[in-house]
Image (cartoon, rainbow, N blue to C red):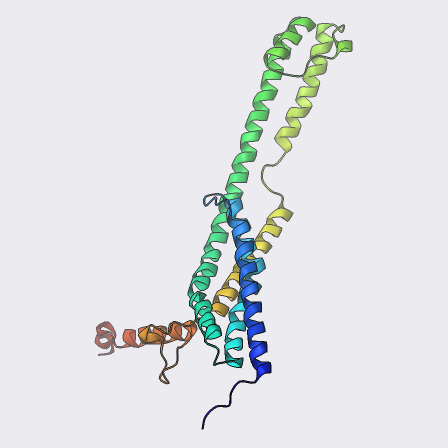
Length: 268
C-alpha cells in the first residue's frame, strides 16, 4: 500500500519549521560566539560568562534540534529537509559533551574565581597596610610641619592642608597619628572575601547552571542519532538514539561483569 503524497499545506509547514529551526541555530551560534570571544580559557570570569550564555540560549538550540525531525515527518519526501535534519542531529553528540563539560567547568571556575578574589583582596590589604606604615613612620620622624610636608611628597601622600602648617608639631603629629590609627583599625576589622549573602547567591547560580547543563545534555542525548555506526542500529534497522546506545552499553557491561571469572570463582 503506497503512501499518499504530502499535501501542499504540510509541505509549506515543514519548510516553515525547517526555516525556524535554522534561524534558532543561527541565533544560538551568534550568541555563543559573542560570549566566547575573545577567548580567555584560563580566566574564571570568562568561563562563568560562557557557561551562563550557553545555559541562557540553550533552549533555542534544543527547540531547533526537535523542530527538524518534526519538519521531516511532515514532509518525508523533501530531501533537503531530511539532509538538514541528519546534519543537525549529527551535532547532537557535540552538544551532549559540551553541556556535560559545563558541570565540572562551572565548579572549577567558581573555586578558582573565589581564590583569585581572596588573593586580590589580601594583596590590597597588604598594600594598604604598607601605606599606613609609611605614613606613620613619616609622621613620627618629622620634626617640623615643613619636614613632614617633604616626607609626604617623598611617599606621594596627600599634602598637608594650609591651615595645618601653622600648628605646633606635637599637635599636628597627634592629629595625624589619631587619624592613621582609626584607618588602621578599620582595615584590620574589614573581613576579606565575599559576604555570606554573595556566597549563597553564587552557590545558587552554580547549582542552577549545573542542573540545567545536565538536563540539556540528557535532552540532546535523547534525540542524537548516529546512523553510520553499526551499533547505532536497532533490530528494526532504524538509527537509535544516543541515550539508547548508552543504556545498551551499560547493560552489556553489567552482563559481562556478572560472567567474569572472578564472579564464577566466587560463586563456587
